[in-house]
Amino acid sequence: DAGVIQSPRHEVTEMGQEVTLRCKPISGHDYLFWYRQTMMRGLELLIYFNNNVPIDDSGMPEDRFSAKMPNASFSTLKIQPSEPRDSAVYFCASSSPPRQETQYFGPGTRLLVL
Amino acid sequence: GQQLNQSPQSMFIQEGEDVSMNCTSSSIFNTWLWYKQDPGEGPVLLIALYKAGELTSNGRLTAQFGITRKDSFLNISASIPSDVGIYFCAGQGNDMRFGAGTRLTVKP
View 1 (cartoon, rainbow over the protein chains, first blue to last red):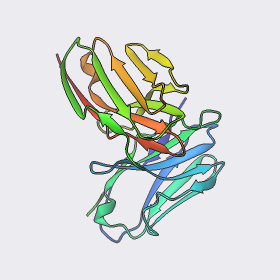
View 2: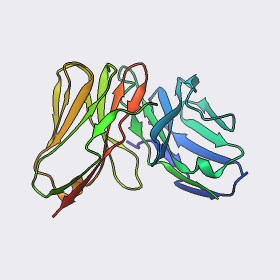
View 3: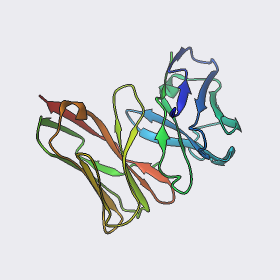
View 4: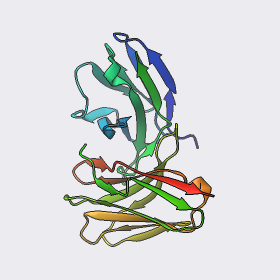
């Protein structure tokens, strides 16, 4: 079975540009999570969805960040406009009940904003 | 989210040695998870613990869910070079929290 798929794997952009990160969860998983990982702050939960509905977005740093899940097999995390401090590795993870806390991570998107 | 207290931060060991790392928190958790992350990859789930006192093994890895529900440890026996990586604990209570990681280096 394919795991969580993320694209692109690497993204280099200039400050002010829009960035869109994509995720395909494991088929049949009802929960989808977006994380950010930096050396300074470690892994931080940004937002998670259940059955395509955003449940908790309290980790989204500011209005420049938005996430959508139009269907059960696709989600996007968008940053507009991007800033250098957004540089990090962004992970998508998915899980399914009854063990929704047991999350399976994708390979991540390494974002560098110049 | 707020980090768990994971220790040690790093370990340098000889191949064949056993390894032990742990995570503690002031909060009670319902689930403890241990992940390993290789460079350039996402965390991979190693062991999941769902019950206080639970002791679970996965090959050379053994993890326990502390009786107080505020801590967990991970042991690796007879380490090999491919054990190199960063090991993260995660605890699920009202939210999911992660440790800062233990960076393991294994010298052949």
